[in-house]
Each structure stands twice: as structure tokens, then as C-alpha cells.
Length: 305
Image 1 (cartoon, rainbow, N blue to C red):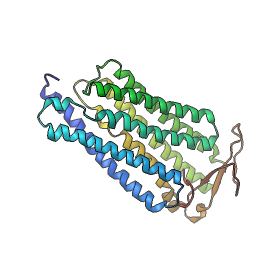
Image 2 (tube, rainbow, N blue to C red):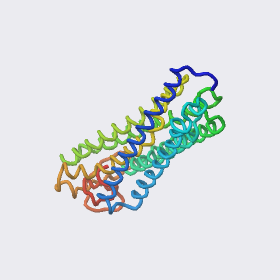
Image 3 (cartoon, rainbow, N blue to C red):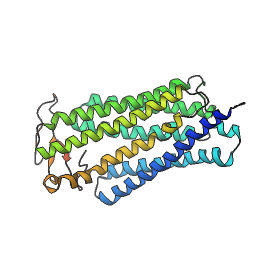
Image 4 (cartoon, helix red, strand yellow):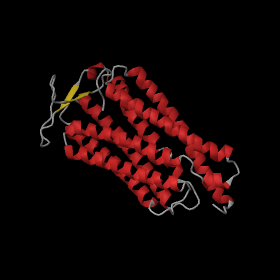
């Protein structure tokens, strides 16, 4: 960077400051959610515990990396225009860590869709898209290591960012749509309280999917239209936190559903058997080849989702 107007400095610094503040706010919210999960679901599956604590640690790593960048911009490099234009470790905290967290969450949701539908094609598509956005993230990280500057004029960088964020938004929309479809397809066959649980899950699934997809799209639009500003940083540095907070909302929602519907729903088991052609699903008391939906019990494997 050679010459910057005052307004350029403001539009480079202020969005980063906002993004950094939101990042710490979201990691605080995530920490509370993980604590609630730890206290409430002590007997959850080891797989679910590993998932929760892995993304939690990755998110803290992302926040620490973002904090390092902020300290360079607003403390150690204060008043230095070259420092303001340097992205430092952003190659790690925005494209790499964010996409790793996003892919983990997306593949998990893909697995949940598979347990509902037994559709290998949908699951394979979600995995492929998640890995594609990871590949895009690796390419973005490569470009930012070579030239760690706030610019979109590096040859190949806009395409890599487009692959990463466009694919991420697309797979979020696919996940929300598929979850909604497969939940609603079974809704009318169950009792009133079970239908009420499913309705809540559908609403929560759509809301979280829309939030993450919208954040990725906004990030992409701001990046592609960027000119001496860092507006894309507001959503870009926080996208990982939106994924993990959305995931934890769905995990911890089990406890809320139990409080809302009481013990009469606590022992309801919805076993959604795949017939291979979208045929009838029903209620069973026992079985080994069915997907278990303990509707609200806290001690279930993965109730309420």
C-alpha cells in the first residue's frame, strides 16, 4: 500500500474492529453453550462429545489467531499503514480454520440426513460439496500466504474465494432444505406432541441454515466488490462461530424440548425406517436397523434433532 485516504483507513480499520468484537462475543456465547452441554449431557455418545469439543477447540484457535491480527493492527502496528494493510495470520483464521469447522458441521448434518432418509446420494453430495469448499479454502490460504494484503486483485484469488464461499452457502441451503423435507415428510404420521417437536426442529434447522448461508453470501459479495475496505471481514471472521453456535443450539435444544413438552414426550422414540422408496415410516418400541429419535429425553443418544 502506498497512499491511503483517511476514509480508506476508516473502512479498513472499522470493519475489522467490528468483526473482532463480534468474534469475541460469539466465542463467549459458544463457551456458555458448551458448558451447558457439558453439564446437561454427560452421558451423550462419545462421538458427539468428541465433535462438540473438537469444534470448540478449533474455534478458540481461530479466535486466538484473529486476536493476534487485531493486536498487530490496533496495538503494535498502530499508525503504520503497512501494518494495517498486512493480513498476518488471516490465511489461517479465515479460510483454513473457518472452512475446516464448516466442513465438520456440514458433514455431521449430512450424516443426520442420511440417518433420516438413507439416501446415500444426498450424503455423498454434501460430503463432496464440503470437501470442495475445503479445497477452495486451501487455495485462498495459499494466495494469502504469498501476498497477505487486503486486496481482491490477486490472479486466481476471487475464483478461489467464490468456490469456498459459494459452495459453503450452497451446501448450507441443501442441508436446510433436505432436513426440512425429511422431517416434514414424517410429521403427519405421528402423535400431536411428536409433531410439535418436529415443527420446532424444522424451524430451528431453517433458521440456522439461512443464517450461515446468508453470512457466506454477504462475505462473498463484499469481497468481490472490495475497494480499499474490509467490509467482508465482519462476516468472514465470524462464519466459523455461526456454524458452531448453530450446532450447539441444536444439541442443547434437546433440554428445552423436554421442558416444553414434559415427561409424556420424554420416552417417545420415533424410529424412522428407510424403505428405499420413501414409503411409510412408523413408531416402534425396539429394533436395531432404525434411526432413533428420542424426541426429548436428555439421556438419549441424540434426542430432539
